[in-house]
Image (tube, rainbow, N blue to C red; front, side, top):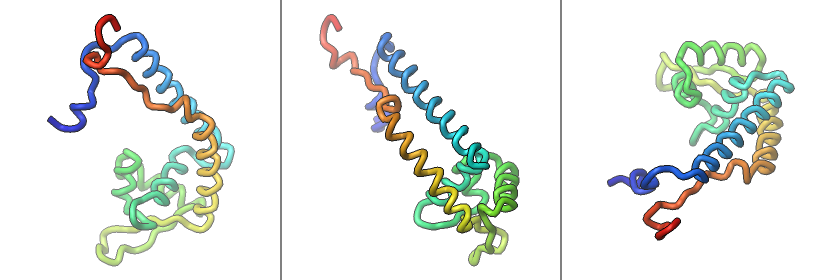
Amino acid sequence: MSGEEDRRPAGPLRKQDFEALARFRFGIRRYLRFSEETVRRHGLTPQQYQLLLALKGFPDRDWATVGELAERLQLRHHSTVELVNRAQRQGLVDRTGHPEDRRAVRVVLTEQGDVVLGQLSALHRDELGRMRSALAFPTWQDEREQGPGS
C-alpha cells in the first residue's frame, strides 16, 4: 500500500468535512480572484503572470523550454507558444538558442519581466499571509480514531 492510500480517510464524509472542503475551495477562489485582478491592474493577464512565475520558479535554472512551460502551465504547446509570443512583444521574456538541442529554444525572463514579477509576487505573498487561515488544508479524523459515539 502506498503512502497516498494510507492518508485517505476511511468511511463516509461528515457534515464538518464538507464544510472544511467548501471553506478551503472558497479560500482558493478568493485568492485566485485577488491574483487575477491584481495582475490585470498591472497590465498583465493572469496567464502572463503564471508564465513569468513558472520561468523564475523553474527548478535549478533560470530558463525553460516551451514544452516545459506548457507542462508547468498545463497548456497545449501551441497555446504556450502564443503566450510566449505575447510576453516577448511586451518585453517580459526573450528567446535564446539551446546549446545542446538546436531544435529547442530557451525562454528567459528579461530584466523588465523580472522587475514586474518581483512586484506582483510580493503582493501575492502578502495576500497569502493575510489568507493563511482560509487556505489551511482541510483535516478530518479517520473514523477508526474517533472512538464510539463520535
